[in-house]
Image: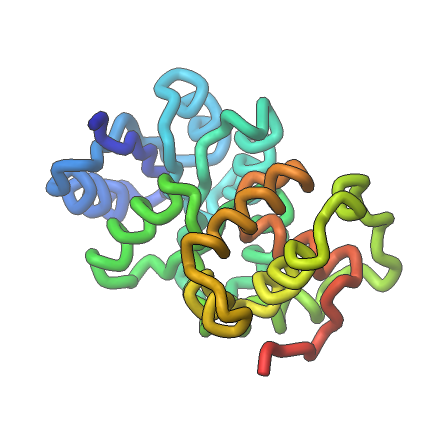
Length: 226
């Protein structure tokens, strides 16, 4: 099995070096390149084809949000997954980063096991954000969501009743295991439903499903899974 290819993007050389050492120490992960700003990151991705990009949010010149938008905007289904790195919990830029196509975020001072674990999770197409973090992030997202939601995507009407139910629970911050317990279904069955939802809505991952649910008004600010 080929190792997961990772690109590291941060304007601090010391942090890039630390992440490289941490990632390269894992047998199933390999760093294919580094970049110190967003413009260089876009070029790096085009040259090296990573599976996952560790992207700093705040950088001089082209910041992480714009770089993420450019990276995920080109052939979205084939684009690498982007994990945003931030110094501050629930950084104000994170909402825009998720809209731009990021698959989640991590604090720069997260434990090494959390960082390498997040890379594996995102590379596998699963959820990155822990439910507790997701719920707090959704509060922030809901606070800045547009007052006039856009029209729902065409694929929304193709969801089955069960898929709609699963989508709403995803948007409320529940993991596959929690959704399975709520609906009395196996985690494998929930994962299948999630895959079908993403396919029908043409979304890259479940984080994008959360964004869609809030932006289209499927979930209202303050709603929570009980």
